[in-house]
Picture 1 (cartoon, rainbow, N blue to C red):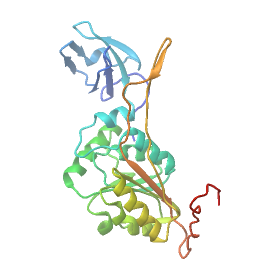
Picture 2 (picture 1 turned 180 degrees about the horizontal axis):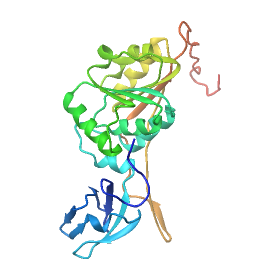
Picture 3 (picture 1 turned 180 degrees about the vertical axis):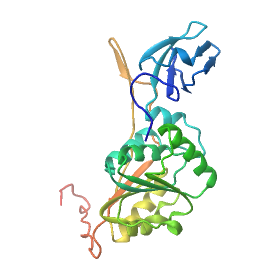
Picture 4 (picture 1 turned 60 degrees about the vertical axis):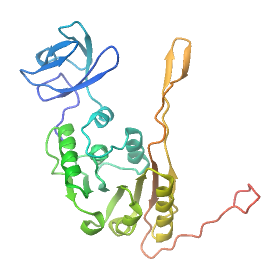
Length: 283
């Protein structure tokens, strides 16, 4: 992972320029490059050698704030072959599925590579991610996006497989399996065979019917703990002097997450206990 995240700007860095209206542009710096906009031009040489957080002025007089982009900004702006997982959901997957440095992770449904970028950062140079994608055109876009963000090929700790997870999987004793697809329930058995005891399966789905089918399949499989289903909503706040209120827009529903842990072979999960109807007493 050779992409540099600090220090003065240099040729090859990806830089995010933000204008006074908060419109953002991402450019890759070149020694003789020029960024053109209807507000004027900015030679890349004006940025190379400057520290992050600098302000540059276009030939038309507009000021731009310059930073290396954050991963969340990159994933929202990256070229797409398929829809991307939003940063709020990718962050929850990394956190709630406990993706740790050195982990061995399987991802199925690579899409445009947004979640892959988060997973690779979380597992670090000592971990490994294997991504399965059925469609070649999506795999091609994902590879370009991932390698553009990290600045070099990721062959050391990333394997991209074009094919169906169930038919192609050859890993065992993996730590985490992340499924982002239309029918993740079809891959639950394959995930169970690949996961080490204590490992986590985490599925991302868009609709309540998909969520229900996924939960029931994991529940009935017999190798997993009781699945946990949830979604995350993000609401920004407007804060300016005494004008403090929720923003008029928010990132509402994007998808549901379902997770469970792999039990040891031969272990039967304890029977679920439900509250009797008509009572709120804890059992």
